[in-house]
Image (cartoon, rainbow, N blue to C red; front, side, top):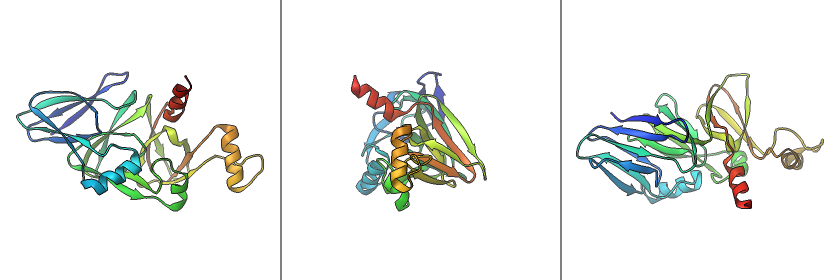
Length: 232
């Protein structure tokens, strides 16, 4: 049985312990170190159609890394692209939707599928557009967030609004709406009011969650960080 462990408190590695015959898959370039009992191959998981859909939905690479314990038990270390925390999420009874760049690794009994969003959500979405990634199967999926991570429990009657750039993943049973603001712009209504308020508040795209389930969020805004670095 494959065991995932987050190792280290600041920018942790994902330590993976595999028994002979175990397989995992991970995002391209995630592998940092592995023992010689393991094999690593780059594969276009699910064929070219699925790879293209994942690329549009979550900004993933066409090729994922597949690691298998071929010659005996073995360990490897994986690392996400951006600095920040890792969360090991159990899936099976619960499935999750993933935000852009959140995926790190998963056990072989799981799969990342593409779900079509509503037209309203698609119009406000970023790289995903009409599609968003959803887990399926049973096992564990590892996600990363820029900075530290926190788990929110959404309950009926207690809706929450979260900046899109801070959302890592969320329970697929939750209802969610995407908009460009949390209020109106100086009394202006409709899309114009939303855009005015978005610019003046610096809020950007937000997600409103309702129902019952979990949302994992991160402390840092990746998009703002990239913009800041590009100014230097």
